[in-house]
Length: 196
Image 1: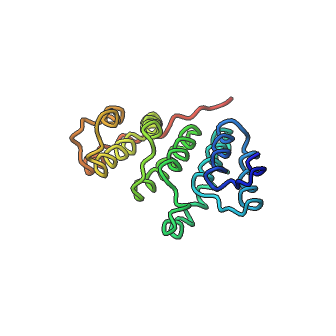
Image 2 (image 1 turned 45 degrees about the horizontal axis):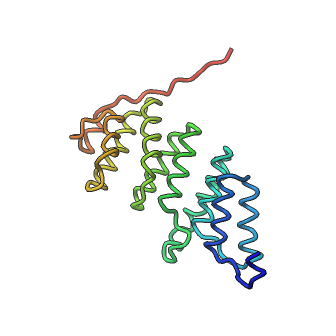
Image 3 (image 1 turned 90 degrees about the vertical axis):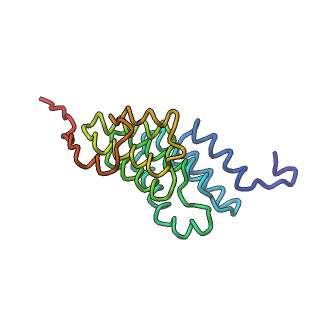
């Protein structure tokens, strides 16, 4: 319809369709939209395009495929950072951390969270809360506390309101420093279930 009037969709127009399909369609539909964007329209998908693809993959439980996309963005992020087109952003990290948490892959979620922190990007509060709660419940209380202390240290001016609730969730009093976490060893193996 738009093409009939001589209007050619640009990257944001394609991203609207990708974002819609990421929340209501299949992974294959999103991949096809990205393919059409690249090959038919001659446009370069941006981070919004790939965030949509990763969101669709996460929604359908295709976490390993989502990680492949994420890793390809991470590999190219140094060059992409210069162009500011494909470097992972807060939405990327939120999607990946949340998907890994839902899959119970706590160590990987923590690794991705650490990478986000190094880049000055933070997953949203819901994903961080899921990570802290999951780490704590998996017997990784020290790691959960390190996550919260790291956030508090890196973003002190923004660490208020609901973000402060993370301290309680991680078992902190609000006065700990980085080195306080190291001496408090409550790590234990996550409970395993045995089948007969």
